Length: 283
Image 1: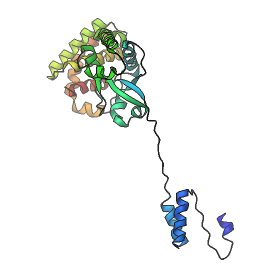
Image 2: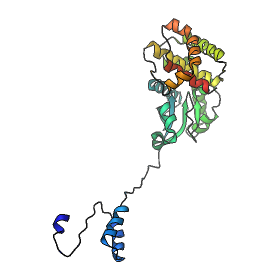
Image 3: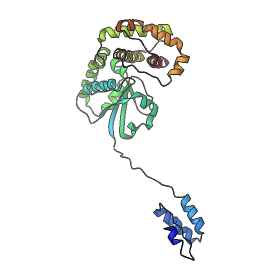
Image 4: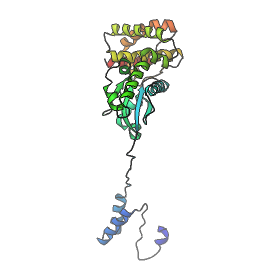
């Protein structure tokens, strides 16, 4: 079009694309101020920046996030167990979620755009500011459950809260959790896992608190099943660095794992040891 109009003598022709109301007003104002056409178009192009406004849905669905550093299938089983402990269906989404994604993204994770997260429950705290966290080990030991009661009392009456707490006491025992999460015989496995953890604490001179111990028992139980079913965690994000800096811990972990290795016919890879080490860094 510009080429055709340029054939008309006596006038200058300028064409600009992406015109908007604000751009038209800016150009009109410049014309009234007798600016040159070149200056007008340069300014229009300079200030031609797309703008936007978001209108988020202010009424978000309430949710409880259940997280685990184990597989998503394991996390879904824990979420299902928590859901079955409620005395009735609530208008709350019990959502299984990936621990590593949540820990990496923090409050910028899409979960917080989509949901009003009441609290997070899991084996390791992802350290999300302003969002309460409940350890699964606290459900097992019945410790520090005031946060849970305080939040759920807005949805359950006194009798229902009592039933819920009794159900948690029944469902969230270490043995029952392991029975729900893995196919291996739980009583024997728990004994092997406890012996391994005790040996590793002795060799490393690091004592874990009861909360971390229970979480670690769960983690190792799930780890043994992964190894038995040939589905181990094959890598760790800083595995090479871990191998270079913590060869002593790797040696101690393999030594502590010896009884489990002999009984179940499995060996523990460095990638899995790296995740065990994370528990000891929290002690």
